[in-house]
Amino acid sequence: GENVEQHPSTLSVQEGDSAVIKCTYSDSASNYFPWYKQELGKRPQLIIDIRSNVGEKKDQRIAVTLNKTAKHFSLHITETQPEDSAVYFCAASIEQAGTALIFGKGTTLSVSS
Amino acid sequence: DGGITQSPKYLFRKEGQNVTLSCEQNLNHDAMYWYRQDPGQGLRLIYYSQIVNDFQKGDIAEGYSVSREKKESFPLTVTSAQKNPTAFYLCASSIAATGFYEQYFGPGTRLTVT
Image 1 (cartoon, rainbow over the protein chains, first blue to last red):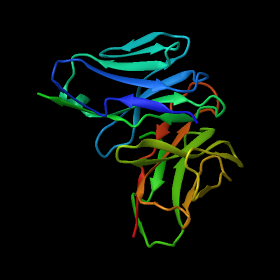
Image 2: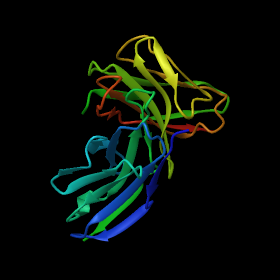
Image 3: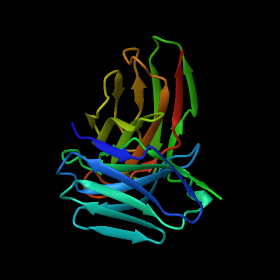
């Protein structure tokens, strides 16, 4: 079945550094790729998403890139801050299932000051 | 906070008992989803519903059942057939069943079965 691989599983950076999380997906028909952030004890919330007809999207310190040929997409966080510490999940749409998503296993990002 | 609620926040059950988790949304969203979250496993899709009176199995539907009798409600029953039911369960909804739409998550229910 469809699968999304996410790396790394943990990432520790110093405040002000950049952080990059990478995901690969298996279903070539996937066309929507959101990223969710889950702070400790809270529900996941969408931080950025990208559609298959776009190669890159940026929102302030966060950017996502998509390579459809290679079936991988990445989240880039610049100038990291302690409040960026959380678990980040990538996801890919399931072609035959409307808006249903397959999620990666998550990356725990720790930003130390 | 998003208009999607789950109750209770914590639930304890004895092995062999069925238990139903509540999910309600007042966002007028068409689509609703149930995910299971285990440490290091991400969010795994249990069931989803794109319209009232219709639902489809996700990756890990065995041992679970759902109903969608009303647009705003999508309860999940964890049956005694589910081999490892202890987990954190998240419900979500999106405005439409097709297209590129954000999923809004509820606060979750932590189920412990002993």
